[in-house]
Amino acid sequence: MSDALGDVRLLLERQALYDLALRYARAADRRDYEAAGALFTRDGCIEGFEGAVTGSAPLYRLMGRDGIVAGLRGLEQFEKTFHQVANQLVEVAGDEARGETYCMAHHIHLVEGERWNRTMAIRYQDRFLRAEGCWLFSRRQLVVDWERDAPLAGPPRD
Picture 1 (cartoon, rainbow, N blue to C red):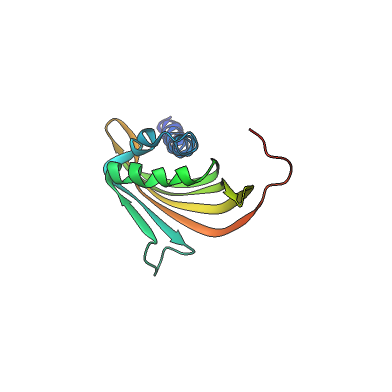
Picture 2: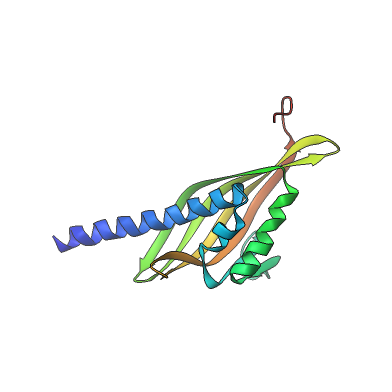
């Protein structure tokens, strides 16, 4: 029975970590930067990379909750965003976890009065910590595998 109980606990932990990724995407798309920052440990960070993390310096680093909130305000340059969280694999070890979370992110912006969609294939290399009574990100390394910027088809919508 204890093996079954351990399996259930692991499933619940994995669901909580997936929910954390979903809450981050929702906060970014709703421009609720404070909510996004609250999903990180006090000294958490986001680092951005193009391609592999190994052997390359980050393009940017947002440190601490205030730094993360300030950095996420960069999304204001886009009319709308849509982050779709997909598969996530995690390894849980007590109050710490590591994982990889896939995301397709759409960033709607204007180019000479025309709406364009910058689509990014993202793989987050995540580290999690159970703190303050819940799972939080301690580090998100945002890896952009590819991106495409193209005009949106059809008439503009409000």
